[in-house]
Image (tube, rainbow, N blue to C red):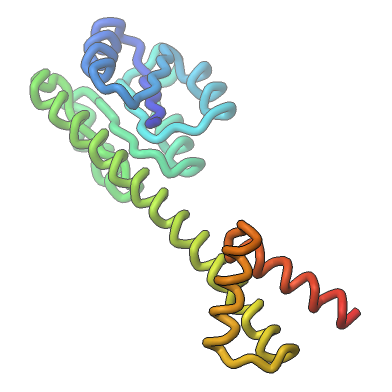
Length: 192
């Protein structure tokens, strides 16, 4: 689930963005109309994508954008009046914030939103894959530790220890990881 926060004082812009994003099935959309409310929301939940339409009724500077950028790794899209774009674009770009001048054609805005959502989906998938690889690596470390203990205490070679863990796990209807942890506990208790 991709969590989106829309911060805008303009009901028209908010509704336009919300309607477009509502077509996506894996999004959770939260809307705020004021910077103070957005800050409270931001403190209680993590967001993947933040869209901020300036100016906001209770904030003229860009402190909210910069604060959210520092405290989160969310993608941020900042919509500002075209006259203000030149004065803040470099600072925002250096901070990793996408800044777009208004008025913006609706089709262009939708393409930007679609690109940001696709990027978030890819990032989420990479995070899942990374987590899976970390888990597999940890399991492999535990199994290798159990094999080393079998080599040391049972005088098996690496292949025998491997087959022992596989066969014993299958017979006991355990995973190799569960059996490896049991082997480690057994030999840790013997050394104490």
